[in-house]
Image 1 (cartoon, helix red, strand yellow):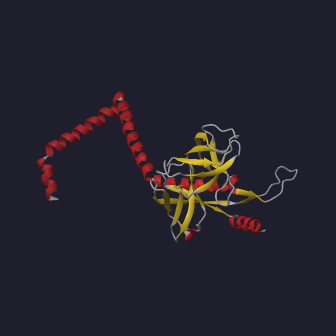
Image 2 (spheres, one colour; image 1 turned 180 degrees about the vertical axis):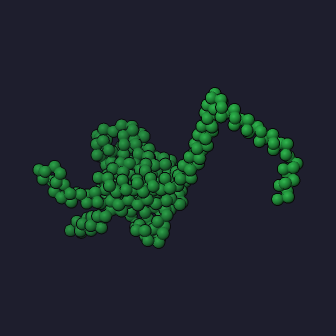
Image 3 (cartoon, helix red, strand yellow; image 1 turned 135 degrees about the vertical axis):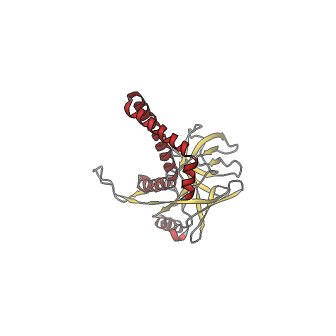
Amino acid sequence: MKGLINFIIKYHFFILFLIFESLSLFLLIRYNFYQKAAFISSSNIISGSIYKTYHSLTEYLDLKKTNSDLLWENTRLHNMQKSSYKSGGVKTIKLNDTIYHQQYEYMPVKVINNSINRQNNYITISKGSIQGLQPEMAVISSYGIVGVIKKTSGNFSSVISVLNINFKVSAKIKKNGYFGSLSWDGKDYTIANLNEIPLHVDILRGDTVITSGYSAIFPEGVLIGTILSFDKKSGNNFYDIKVKLSTDYKNLSVVYAIKNLFKNEQLKLESQAEND
């Protein structure tokens, strides 16, 4: 308290000056229309700038929650789309008489480890058997295929990447349905090879390549990439096709694990057919 009194005594002239200056400004603004309008306009600009900065700051701080909400919304939409369902009824003359049952279930997971510079690249994701993940489940990103789950522990899974020389997936050209086998040759992480497409098939640079659905792992229609180039293989009747991959494997943070709810039934039937 004594220090405050000493401060006031020492600077009382300056304090009086500030008081009279503030009073003068108040009277000037209060009783003069032009100065009052100018002051209100300036204060609005300042307060608007402060509110804008505050809003930007709160938006930035809320990004984590916003991204999480978007991720779950994307998962919900994946699970709702028609390609995730399988027809369980028979079409009659009534156009709306087809019944669909969900065939594919999507789960968002974080990528916690990834490699692209080896011949056999693997990805580690943040969920495992406790969360319902199993070997041979497909993994995709928002931009296309990523790989297939190889092994799981309680809370983690190892994914064999498309960028693995042992990875193969059935792929087809979207515009005409011709299918072949897609694999990686261990060289450029942005390019894969599409084999077994016959020479009589009409293809062009830029044609879209998608999953064929001819397995119990990947749904039909998941984007793989676009045709970058194609040549005739010497000595056989198939093209040598290079596919520009749609997924950027150097920039994976969140992916989706896909569970085929009819997988066991399909594999059992196919096994019986092979044994007969």
